[in-house]
Structure formats: C-alpha cells, structure tokens
Length: 180
Figure (cartoon, rainbow, N blue to C red):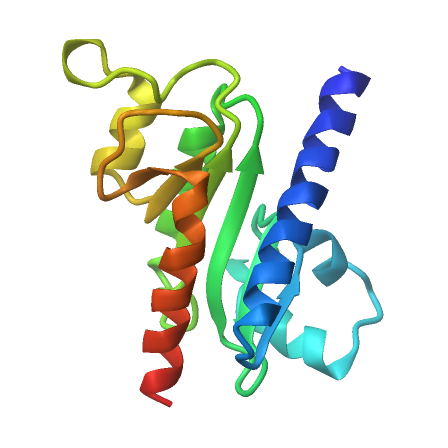
C-alpha cells in the first residue's frame, strides 16, 4: 500500500509539473495549486481567496474537495478547473463524479470544470460498445467534464489521450480570458 501511495503522489507531481509548464507557457494570468496547500492553517492572501472559491459546505462545516491540481484565474481567484490524477481507478471515478456534483450546488463552484487524468492501470477505458466499463460509462455520460488517459484508447469528446489536454487547455484559456 505504501508503494501505491508513493506512486500516486509521484504521478500527481509529474502531471502537475507537465501541466504547470504548459499552462505557464501560454502567458495567461493562471495559478496552479493543490488541495494539500489549501488545507494549511496559515494561507497567503491569494491562496485564502482560492480556498474560498472551492470550499464545499455541509451545514456549518466546510471542506476542501479532493483536488490534486487546481487551476485558477490569478486576477479574480476563480477556479477554472480541477484535475484529479489517478493511476488505478477503483472506485475513484465515482468519487470524482461526487465532487463534480457537489460543485453544482453552489453558485461559487458550479462553473468549475472537473477533469480526470489517469494511467488507467486497470484498463477501464480500453473498451467501448458492449464491453464498456462502469467507469467509462460514468465519464462518458456522467458529470465529469473530461478524462485524459495515458494510453492508447478509443477516444470520444469526453475521453481522450493525455496528449489532447494541451490543445484543450489552450482553447479553454483562450475562451476564459476572451470574456474578461
């Protein structure tokens, strides 16, 4: 289990490095952080504003959802997208869909895009048609905005090879900052 934890953190770190490098090359005022940074008691003024824009409320409690990578607008601190990085998808696709659903209940979080990035070690995204997996069905027809997979898979509008994330991000940020 310690290997799984370590490899998951290593995958998250690698993806964060790749995404950060690409996003910063686009020269938009974009910040990147993660849920761990937002859970600290002492936050910078910027991260405090980011935290307030992603919090999920349960009665008098607030929590930070599982958000491995958080991409936000450095001008108004609104969250643009959350990336959930997973090597193995066991039960994690449903967990990701849960957080996306929770975002829908608040005006502050309802526009946040939720992406799943995975090596798909279990092969859940390899089949379509009759043999389609439960996880792929949840992504294709459910709440998750897109899934980017680190292997050759049959692609759709919502499930793509990881290499497509770069063009999708450029388009997303062009649209985001066009309206500002």
